[in-house]
Image (cartoon, rainbow, N blue to C red; front, side):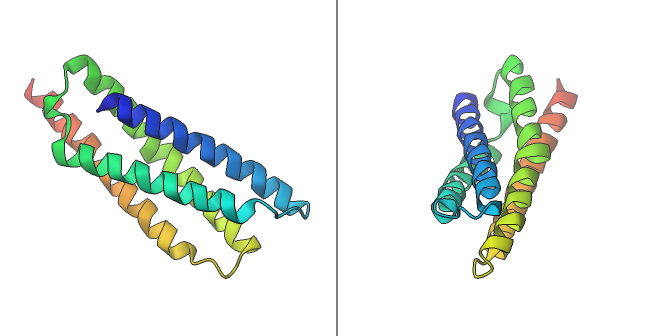
Length: 130
């Protein structure tokens, strides 16, 4: 499960980078790829949410102790960096495309943050048991 999460976070971060680039281009007047770039980000973000949901439902009890530390680090990154970076990008995107309902994306990001927090709390709780 850890490798699936790592791959999903990696892909999500690449889409974040791509959308940052597209926002810079849009601010200079080139909006040709902006909509499709953000549509791809939304798809990748939903995939990451699915991985977090699966992980939250099965959580860390089944992982080996060395995996738990890495899992906690990756989930913490999602919690602190990925979600907030994506939220910031959607807010910027809304300025270029006011017809987009970014509230839907913010709601998904709130769910992702809550899932990450639940996973981290479970890991922390399990560490106290060992």
